Length: 87
Image: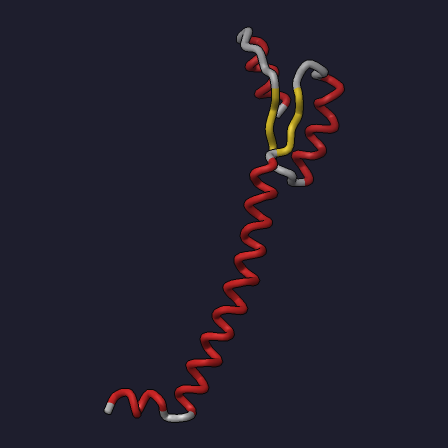
Protein backbone atom coordinates (compact mmCIF):
# COMPACT_ATOMS: atom_id res chain seq x y z
CA UNK A 1 0.00 0.00 0.00
CA UNK A 2 2.84 2.37 0.79
CA UNK A 3 4.28 1.84 -2.68
CA UNK A 4 1.01 2.90 -4.28
CA UNK A 5 0.79 5.97 -2.04
CA UNK A 6 4.36 6.95 -2.92
CA UNK A 7 3.71 6.47 -6.63
CA UNK A 8 0.57 8.60 -6.53
CA UNK A 9 2.23 11.35 -4.51
CA UNK A 10 5.25 11.32 -6.86
CA UNK A 11 2.93 11.97 -9.79
CA UNK A 12 1.73 15.09 -7.92
CA UNK A 13 -1.76 13.81 -7.19
CA UNK A 14 -3.30 14.67 -3.85
CA UNK A 15 -4.61 11.88 -1.63
CA UNK A 16 -7.30 12.75 0.87
CA UNK A 17 -8.14 9.28 2.12
CA UNK A 18 -7.25 5.63 1.78
CA UNK A 19 -10.12 3.20 2.32
CA UNK A 20 -9.57 -0.46 3.26
CA UNK A 21 -11.63 -3.30 4.64
CA UNK A 22 -11.22 -4.41 8.24
CA UNK A 23 -8.87 -7.34 7.62
CA UNK A 24 -5.97 -7.68 10.03
CA UNK A 25 -3.33 -6.81 7.46
CA UNK A 26 -5.19 -3.66 6.45
CA UNK A 27 -5.45 -2.57 10.08
CA UNK A 28 -1.72 -3.09 10.45
CA UNK A 29 -1.09 -1.02 7.31
CA UNK A 30 -3.29 1.80 8.62
CA UNK A 31 -1.45 1.87 11.97
CA UNK A 32 1.94 1.98 10.24
CA UNK A 33 1.08 4.45 7.49
CA UNK A 34 -1.09 6.94 9.40
CA UNK A 35 1.85 8.51 11.30
CA UNK A 36 3.94 8.62 8.10
CA UNK A 37 1.17 10.37 6.14
CA UNK A 38 -0.73 12.61 8.60
CA UNK A 39 -2.53 14.43 5.76
CA UNK A 40 -4.21 11.21 4.58
CA UNK A 41 -7.25 9.84 6.39
CA UNK A 42 -7.02 6.05 6.65
CA UNK A 43 -10.59 4.75 6.81
CA UNK A 44 -12.25 1.38 7.25
CA UNK A 45 -14.72 0.52 4.52
CA UNK A 46 -17.90 0.47 6.59
CA UNK A 47 -19.90 -1.08 3.73
CA UNK A 48 -17.84 -4.24 4.13
CA UNK A 49 -19.01 -4.58 7.74
CA UNK A 50 -22.63 -3.91 6.74
CA UNK A 51 -22.36 -6.55 4.01
CA UNK A 52 -21.05 -9.12 6.51
CA UNK A 53 -23.84 -8.26 8.96
CA UNK A 54 -26.57 -8.61 6.33
CA UNK A 55 -25.14 -11.94 5.15
CA UNK A 56 -25.10 -13.27 8.70
CA UNK A 57 -28.70 -12.18 9.33
CA UNK A 58 -29.99 -13.57 6.04
CA UNK A 59 -28.12 -16.81 6.52
CA UNK A 60 -29.83 -17.29 9.88
CA UNK A 61 -33.28 -16.31 8.58
CA UNK A 62 -33.07 -18.49 5.48
CA UNK A 63 -31.77 -21.40 7.53
CA UNK A 64 -34.81 -21.21 9.80
CA UNK A 65 -37.20 -20.85 6.86
CA UNK A 66 -35.65 -23.75 4.94
CA UNK A 67 -35.77 -25.96 8.05
CA UNK A 68 -39.46 -25.07 8.54
CA UNK A 69 -40.21 -25.78 4.87
CA UNK A 70 -38.37 -29.11 5.01
CA UNK A 71 -40.32 -30.05 8.13
CA UNK A 72 -43.63 -29.17 6.48
CA UNK A 73 -42.75 -31.16 3.36
CA UNK A 74 -41.68 -34.13 5.46
CA UNK A 75 -44.93 -33.98 7.44
CA UNK A 76 -47.00 -33.86 4.28
CA UNK A 77 -45.04 -36.71 2.73
CA UNK A 78 -45.36 -38.91 5.83
CA UNK A 79 -49.10 -38.33 6.03
CA UNK A 80 -49.77 -39.10 2.38
CA UNK A 81 -50.94 -35.62 1.44
CA UNK A 82 -48.96 -35.71 -1.80
CA UNK A 83 -50.68 -38.94 -2.82
CA UNK A 84 -54.09 -37.42 -2.12
CA UNK A 85 -53.23 -34.32 -4.12
CA UNK A 86 -52.20 -36.40 -7.14
CA UNK A 87 -55.50 -38.29 -7.28
